Length: 214
Length: 214
DNA sequence: TACTATCTAAGTATTTATACGTAATTCGTC
DNA sequence: GACGAATTACGTATAAATACTTAGATAGTA
Image (cartoon, rainbow over all chains, first blue to last red; front, side, top):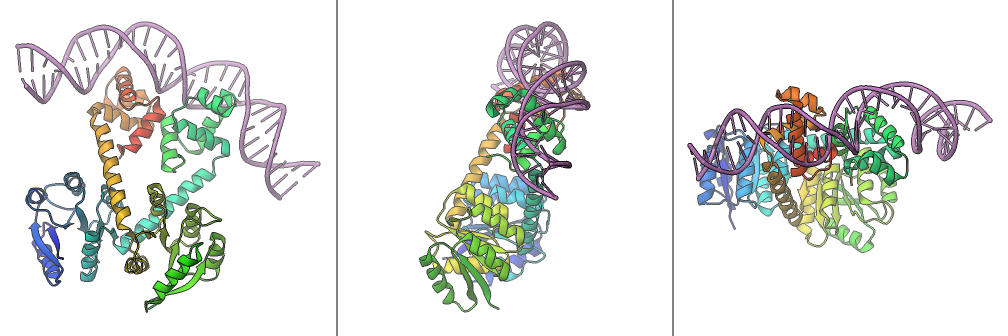
């Protein structure tokens, strides 16, 4: 079984390097190389690789859009992002789109690259260690932050906030909780102050950010 | 270098099986086994493993809570979830908490288990293939759905919706877009109808669900 | 026991949002 | 050039949310 890989990067040297590394294995083969997003999209119409190595910084099409278009046409395509962009938001977006892996050019050695291709081919996801650490600490930070916010709210305030996100009016919330509308208004005002929100929109936004729903 | 693993599962047979598999390798060692969440939390206070294999269905503490508490106390702990639960929401939650991997008991063979431990130890994330597929198709389905919703909105409606999520009032939005308040109200009404929302809360909720922000 | 936080709820007032109908203007498309 | 969709906007209402103050009841804690 040979894993058929396509490589897309606008730097010929990178392509050459990747080709050399991959050619040194027996079970992985580079079947196509592309230097632009347009060329890639066209090429995929002719021949589909098992795994696609993709640089996010191509000259013609933004990485996010390119990835989205590929996965839209070929939902099962195994894409491994190989880039120098260290932006976290970007990884989030790609992973959400459904990429199988994310590697940094700066600290990816040969064995790691090979391993990533193998994993992507098997349908396992792969995240560069340093990125993984970053994401993890990011997630933990956000989590703690949101937990801090949630812990600042009283039980009743949480009840009211939850019902607000469910599109109930103060009247309906009051009926739901068996209290007067004035009480609900009071809790609502507390929420606005505690969460530094200006209005209902702000309340819902923060409620969703801190995953208060469900 | 030996990878030190702790195993937590309420079925003695599972623990025995895992121990047998892991003992057959030279570079991984089971240093502790626990059968309850309470025992695990106590044990971690005495000795920290490199990787923690964790069943989500323990008798005393819900899996999500247990994971959150462990990662709160030991943010660098490499946790691999090993369970029979196939619920997608659950995986989402665990991954968001910061687990390194997620395996299904039903279709995890020995080599895959060993590989997952090795990866978690290296700080790479690992997702069972069948789960990975499910998540991928889930993501794509959601994505298409939200894109469908977004595509139903006109440019101006999207503008207004975005500004609503930024907590602006109709007056402020009108000023921002250089149109009258009545126009904004009109767009807002269209949004309410198109998105089947009852009020501002509903609009913000749907806007966030379909990732219209940023 | 005393203190504190929370939940409850009232008054009073202003600002915003929701709901429907109508319609002129612009802009891309057939 | 005709057509439809989108943007713009007004009139007229009612419903809802926001803002600030005060205060009794209750429950947990030092």
